[in-house]
Length: 244
Ligand code: SF4
Ligand code: SF4
Image (cartoon, rainbow, N blue to C red; front, side):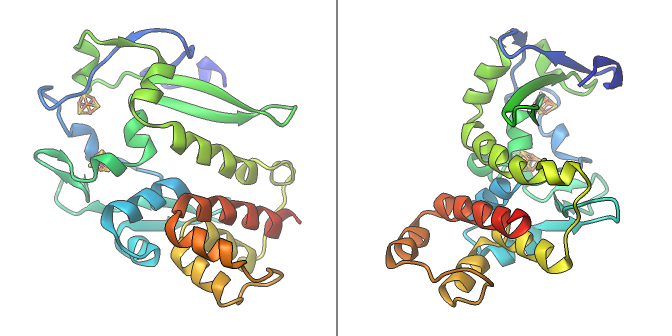
């Protein structure tokens, strides 16, 4: 990433470089950043929305997610729905703040930092951090000092990043970089296994997915109670379907 390519309010920051920032209900801009935003959702974000709403993953997608795929996109992009209230507010914001705070998406946790997971030539994931100092954000006037690495931990981003790194192995796969594209069926399988995990589980149990052996009784029991284990399985399954 080159600094020259970044907008004025975005700057590269080292992982151990302190910055002053704090967000709390006392700041004058409280919840301003929950409006007029394009909030891209990762598979782990959708898992956490499902946990917050206690809905079936299909229902979460139908109610709260917009799926887009232009002809230039190899994979679909998922966004959180905004409300048509004149401010394009997030569907989960209230006067008191975020109504799904403990399960809010990774991008909400990370703001005003941004983390890029870039795969280097050795095939290893490397962290790159940026700081977004937007005009409306008054949190930078607060005195709390922390480094990007400390902020990531404080905001509970570790499990989000762990899953994002696994997904990056698909999105940034060497074959994708070289121009590989996929059939509609393969993309449907990708979306199913990574985002609609309840339907994926039902289809695994019904043995209705191609080239997939039946689940063992231990897997059935594990996936019934551990949605993160199910998502990990889904990511690996999708990777095999897409790249063999
Ligand atoms: S999910 Fe919560 S923190 Fe994120 S934009 Fe919506 S209300 Fe704000
Ligand atoms: S704009 Fe900044 S300080 Fe204000 S609510 Fe959002 S993150 Fe917090």
